[in-house]
Image (tube, rainbow, N blue to C red; front, side):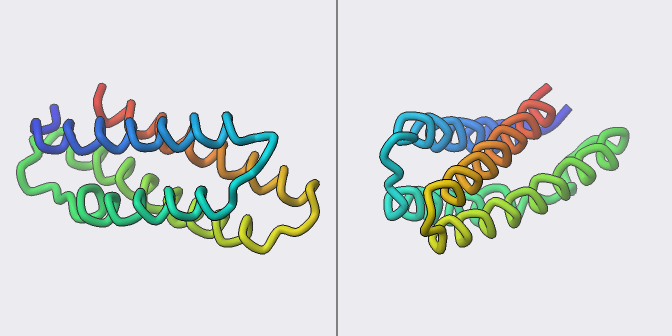
Length: 120
């Protein structure tokens, strides 16, 4: 079982991701790229301060391997999300914009599922 500090960090991260996902769904008809980038910058800052620096020091020995594996996937998926956000900024055609948004939504959903794994 994860310490309370880890659980809280993953729960808060999941909440922030859910807020971003709701924003993306609600702004689907009129994509607000600037607002998406601003929201992502806030998310990135929070991620770097609260998730990226988590360590396995206070974890029970039997869960360290699983935690490290999922934590690695979270970091990898977050980097890919950052790349997708950059590509969204350069999208000019609506079809490209739609593909980028779908990719971003998929990555956000995957990150939420990783947080759920961590909190289970």
